[in-house]
Length: 232
Image 1 (cartoon, helix red, strand yellow):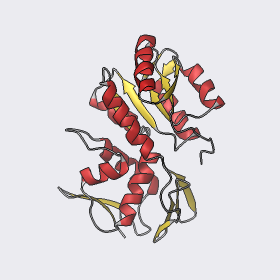
Image 2 (cartoon, one colour):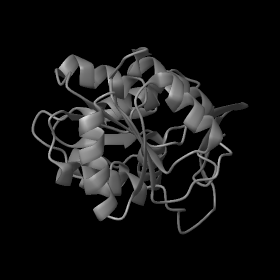
Image 3 (cartoon, helix red, strand yellow):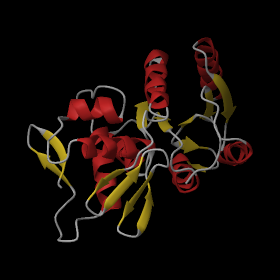
Image 4 (tube, one colour):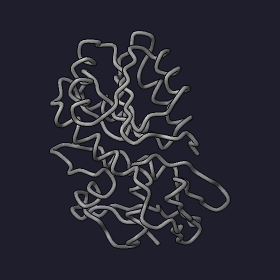
């Protein structure tokens, strides 16, 4: 469980393109964000150790290593910290890899600053505490939205922000399929675009973490053209 406190409007921008960082800082500051910038992995790690932001915007390619390796560390140390990947490597395989490693969202450069702002606000809205702090229980699974921890049997599993929102949505309607656009709004805070596989990747990650039921049945099932549901 990530115990670091966050101030809601603080962003950490990790990108070696200093000119781009200046432009994004100027834009995001006008949009009400307090932005710090780091231009390599080493300074980013130091900044994160000093103070955890509300969210991280992380470039895939850094001068002293891969941003994906930094993402792995972020997910290990701060599983609930929202991370949006921002990279010139916009091929589908790169996006899939970033999402598989736990990124909450992914944008290819060059991107419209307005879209980046909208994606960040969607992520940050999902960090708001749920209206009720009660746990959700179904069979051998118990999920605490406040802690971001799911217990399966005797095992506690940390979920990312997107995984937690996804599981919460499915548990509220066990056995009833939710279509992808509906799930995307609930779990990602936005609509899916054409060829957008981000929701599918979050479902895949969540399936791996939860594992099957004791009888071997998958916990999360897909219905063609109808979406996903949690099997009770």
